[in-house]
Amino acid sequence: MNRYCVIMCGGVGSRFWPFSRTDRPKQFLDFFGTGRSLLQLTVERISSIVPPENIVLVTNRLYEPLIREQLPEIRQENILLEPARRNTAPCICWAANHIAALNPDAAIVTLPSDHLVLKEREFEAAILEGFDFVEKDDRLLTLGINPTNPNTGYGYIQQGTKVKGWQGIRKVKSFTEKPNREMAELFLKSGEFFWNSGMFLWSAKSILKAFDKYAPNIGNLFHAPDGIYGSAEEAAFIEKNFPNAQGISIDYAIMEKADNVYVKTVDLGWSDLGTWHALYEASPHNSDGNVTQNCKVLPTDCQGSIFATSSDKVIVVKGLKDYIVADSENALLIYPLEEEQKIRQIVNEIKSRFGDNFV
Image (cartoon, rainbow, N blue to C red; front, side):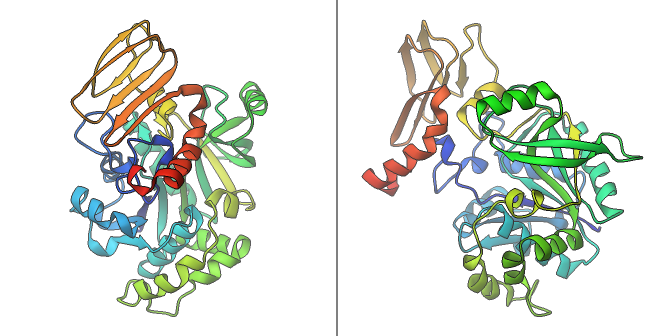
């Protein structure tokens, strides 16, 4: 009962435009035709480890109706509604303070809501060992994924010395956020670096201590008088203080600075599903290397492309190689897979030129 899970589910997912929209981002979508959204799959995955009453969701207030629709079993008091978008550090600091007020001895696993994990038994074993590890000392633990390619969209963790008595856990030597291609290739060849999965474990005491030491500008904002957290006054306190927090990731705010950070290397069949290319890699391919996502496609001379539509239309296409073809509502994307990192910028331009209805 001292083990909690925080699921971060307030992101917009703009790199998955036009499927992922501001009013219904990717964590609420069913990408694989299972009848379950990525968020629902995340909750199901952790429910065998953490009791449902200890699962806390942190999301933008815009998405409360979607949370209630998809996860009616989650208690209302376990849904923390952010009044502004401020990245992962303020989100985690609020959640940790909220949980610590309920249970000062809490240990917390913090998960993104939109990742793919195919090896659920290995995931369960890794989280259970991670809890054991962080409950025994003042430690911050991240899960590291063995890299399969020099991906420039992920953060990288360099492993250091082994931790005696713990299989696969090492001290972290360094973090590098989204290196260029040349550096990523060097990381891959060295064998010392792992992808940062964005999944973390710590005790409530340890992460709050780290905020006070390494990010006091954030930590101080969430120091509330006794009795605020978990009461009817918490919402007003957050409404006043949360928008003043710096928009920064937990990696930059804490993990890259702290001296008690460790990494456990895991093989989970993992993808962060952050981009169309990640979805392409995670999906079944036909003999031409094409992927179809719940749609009807008649391709000719097409290779290495992904086709997706949210309606019942037929896609007829010829001569595309390594392209994204995605149709959703009032928007159509036809774009090279290798240039997908520009999609976020494109979404901003669309919003500026044509308005919010298209994003």
